[in-house]
Image 1 (cartoon, rainbow, N blue to C red):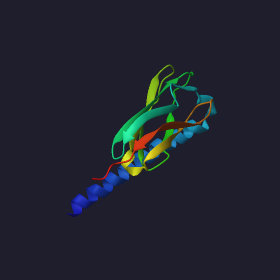
Image 2: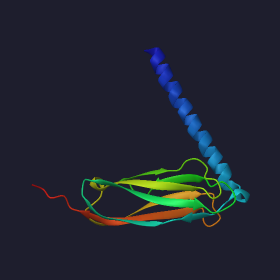
Image 3: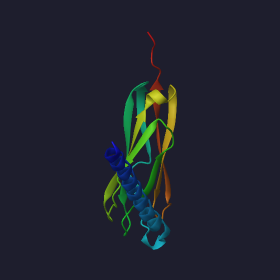
Image 4: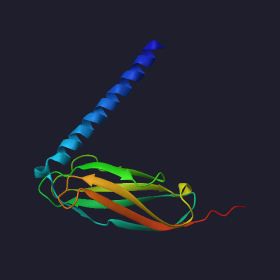
Length: 144
């Protein structure tokens, strides 16, 4: 039992240290403005039409690195608890493309028109903070 507990604690510490090392690298890149690049969003606003309450949908935001340095998405956060953000975590080379996805759970949102966002922080000269917006309509679940 002690051995299992030791391994669980060790694995947790290793994961925390690895995440902190990744965060430290992102902070250094964000501080070095000479390594900034530019980003072009294919769409920064996405409309998902109508979704029945209780269902999920995925919204996709594509981007291209239009600069001369590797593009790093240092932080990507959903603006609410009803969305989980996923994104290209590795550096995107000049001319390369990446994505930010949002898995939206309509069960955690009210029926009617919705407007949600995902906040992206990157090493980009044309603004380090980008707000991606998605909208749509949630049709109320009919109770039997």
